Image (tube, rainbow, N blue to C red; front, side, top):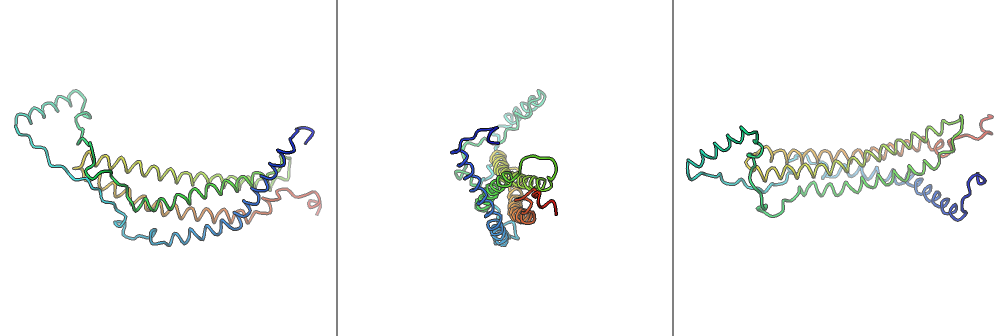
Length: 256
């Protein structure tokens, strides 16, 4: 192979050192880190913060008061406003008329997020990031163990490929959890903006509490899924570790 492709010895030495480091790190992850982490997450699921029965405890007060109704000082002005609205509807510009209340500044300053959920999210996000990083390391290790392509005797290679596919799936699912958290913040912000603009509509206020409750339940499910993924990966790799590390049997073994 060296005659077909010339590789600098210094670079080859560094690459081999990298492979050895990845191998040592990945084997330690599978043997020690994964089981420790699954037990840690299992204990986290028993924490009181994830076992609130009354979801009202996670509600956050929306400090936006309902303004006093606008009274017309002259009945004629009110009729003119109604006629203007009628003309606008006839012109097809209804959306421009329903403008809501103009919001220049929040009465209590910046509208705070739901602190209960923010604290929980800040605890869950590092766990998601850790799973993605560790899966990436183990995936690289298994990929480096895949031998060159040959005809026949590829059963072990198929196990390696299945393992890589599972690790890639776990990575993708973990990344989707981060997207879910971002979507929660965006959705809640839009609803709070609606409340500021349409303070008389109670449904917007109720929707915010529903969104908060849904996110709390989702966060608990995320922690449970993270634990389950550690369990699944640890079990899958241990059961197939022989084929993962030695995907092809030697010719001597094939004779017996």
